[in-house]
Length: 619
Image 1 (cartoon, rainbow, N blue to C red):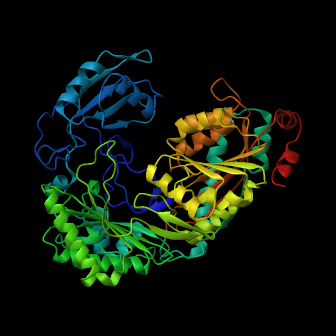
Image 2: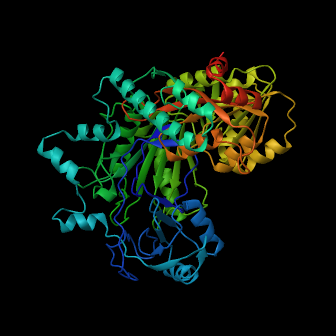
């Protein structure tokens, strides 16, 4: 799981945007995310003013205007259940904002026609023996308008936090470091202690959740043996590099501190906080020197361009963001994102020509880029495949990891800290305890890094990944590294894994699953498939956000008692280890080993002290 700076952190963290579909790369956010807008009621806004409800331009979608409030929802219904019911009614929700353990939700639609259809379908509809009620909800005021009404300027609005630090004369570069790498001024040994404390608290929380669903005596004994933790927590593994460790950074292009120009860098805060300021990354400790050099050259190109940067207030302008990927092979890839606005194909081709000239024969030639892409991106739409247009160079770059070479495309996932990733994978390999007859399922495999590093030590590896291009890269990676005992299946793990486990002719008696899911964890159907299959005796669970409720739910479901829904014997948590992949941030990876209990082991653990079981599991 990588930790990635997010350039446009405009969506409230408690909302789920059904239209902003991103690549399912497993990337955690280091960036600053805005808070939730306060719910508004009772006012019908059919034709809001341009500055109400985040309306940017006439005719373009807003996340707030066509909003309704739905009441009398069953208290413990989840987002997925509600969305499934709405889609079943033929509705087209774009964003659903649910209140935790409450009976109402806010739902937005793309147009007034969709909203009217929802009002008619939802009012009086029965959902889990509750009659739903729907009414028009008030659009939230644009944060920049709020800022103006408080006497600030929309173009250079700085939030209250920034104002306080300005009074203390804190340099802007330091303010940016506080946002992107909040632990930058904490000694590294202290950072590691802080992360161990976070991991300890998370494992205690998960342990309490498991106990509620696994009340049998064996887990109470298990929990007491580990001082209330889910399992034994081993010492943290530090990152071998502490500065400039990111091999991929995503930079925003937007107004600088003076409100003018198109600065390439990171947001100082978020739009929802009333702040659109972008500051250059030259003093950010996690960005490599190579990436900073590339940013400087691109800054010169943006400065002389006849197209302005995108203005997030009114969505005018073009240059949107810049993704820089630097590899230890010396190959670098850059993706420039442009809002096409009213540009014709000829207009976009002109920009591609200018980019080619600038970075092949012009001042940008000093960068020596291996790969340069242009990605036109206007309004995000559901189900639309990213349009990466190669401007010059090769279609991909290469990175070396664990003695292997990996091909990486623009939308492929790859760990952002290569040196620390090698330490992470070493733990996974060690804990798998593979044999010659081991079959490994690499679930959410990306470009196949985990499975490929283990392939020569096992009988067979099956990789599952939903990003088509990542699967293609994985297949090439296997071929180029001389690995012929690994196959890849493209699809969602929740759809693919159950079928594979039911149809795969596996004769090995040692089957292991390695799961490296997005931060919210695995789909429940994946967990159910793992529980159902007696073949899988061990799970290595890698989490980039062990504090996430989705991860807690996954572990609970893997360990809970047998039931009609979760068939098969439960798993027992054996050990966990923290790997610091993201120095100077609060993020880290956690690896957990879980072993399948046999009925005999369960009987012994239930009827006697389970310390012997604990000791034998790691030998």
